[in-house]
Length: 168
View 1: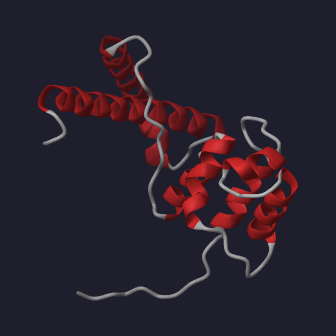
View 2: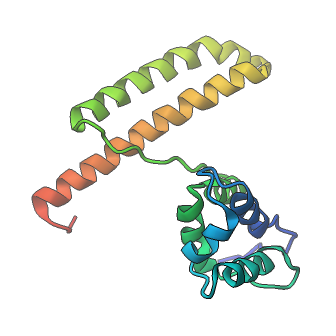
């Protein structure tokens, strides 16, 4: 097996986490995030250590804090960042609010809408002409369809596990 890995400069995941802490989507104050992310001590000392780890060159931030940071800030930006740099995409899987029927109905509607819109824009895509507004709509409807598909897969997995236990 050939390993063609070549060292390169990578963008900073730490910078993405730092930004999510400073501008938490849930509005939580940075001083309140530190204890939730597992930093010990008083509110001020926990904040000081956290910010030093996130901002100072050479300081390491424990990778095991990534999920606590994301939970504390309600921010998926680190996952979007990682997925983008691995040529992938992160899609949050929706939970059915009113039972499996609503999830399956939403899946069918999302895929139908995305398919209809994709057919409408196929000419523009083949011509290489996608205006920003159109790209935004394609991304929105595409992500909605993917989320609905992932939700159905998760629902099927949960249904199977409920029926047969944890085994596959």
